[in-house]
Image 1 (cartoon, rainbow, N blue to C red):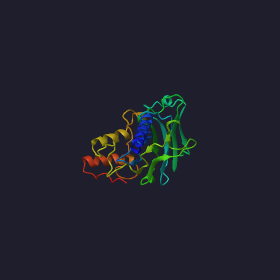
Image 2 (image 1 turned 60 degrees about the vertical axis):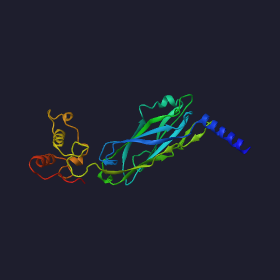
Image 3 (image 1 turned 120 degrees about the vertical axis):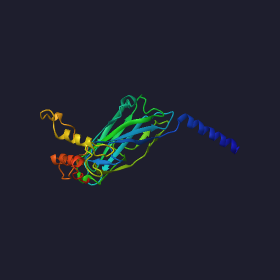
Image 4 (image 1 turned 90 degrees about the vertical axis):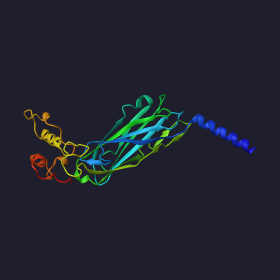
Length: 271
């Protein structure tokens, strides 16, 4: 009798799993653009955090979801933020009742929060088995050498009013907090590494004739002084400060020429 009961309960559980699938999902930091060797360069360009979702359930769609994030930095670091949807994610079609992105207390210092959330009326929702990019957060740090050595972190967070980190599959299935692979923390470092002179931002960090040409194009115009005809600025201005004086000027260009062709002093060390 006990064995029959156990077999019966096992079949019930199996049918339940078959009917409702595997509930829950995950959110993870899929890619970070703008890092240098896994760290945030100062000064540097924007740093973009790309978030992806996976719906573990092969049967049921996510009918409503709320995912909030908190971005915090130590030591008075300041930044400008922006956010948006991945171009491949049809948020307004899938979440036809509402899909919104809201920021809370965003002032570019200390800790800022942003929330992504949506709910369906008759829409697709997050489809069963979905796996892919959904949205991104971009942070552009202010250029201040005092920030070097500080830390910046991205983590999940409660954001009002809908608030909790949660995915809902509807009353018949339930609601579950998706897994999250954070927090993620990054050191803020100088964009200049080793010795100066990598003016063109070569990933191999080589100092060669390409750097000399890049600096000359940046400093001098070929067409009567039109600012539009100047070359782009160096990705890291400290790399172009060849003599380490704290200023980018003609002495840096002359110093780089002397080093390359006349046996002059090598570029100064990075700060």
